[in-house]
Amino acid sequence: MKNQNNKNIGYMSSLEAIYSASTGCKLQFDRLNSVREDIDKVSTFLGISPMQTLLFASMVEKSFHESFNLEDLFKHLDCSFLKLLTQTESGF
Image (tube, rainbow, N blue to C red; front, side, top):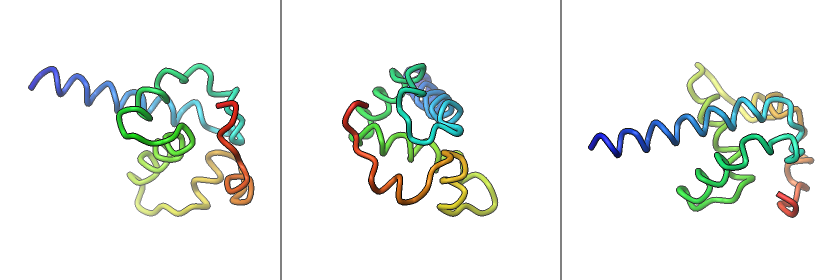
């Protein structure tokens, strides 16, 4: 059980690192090289893409506030909805 708790804490630490590094990243993934291992770890564990991992980490953090909407997410990432829609995962 203790090993499982350590893994869970590790994933939560990775989510926090991803969230912190993504502040104002404008979906420019070269700005996230410092957390690439964290993104890969969470992405593999959840079976989601790196882009989804970035969004998931941001939504997890934002969900602890009283209210949360997509505008909050886009402000955090400093990007527009259209940029998110047109962003490809190539090069990440």
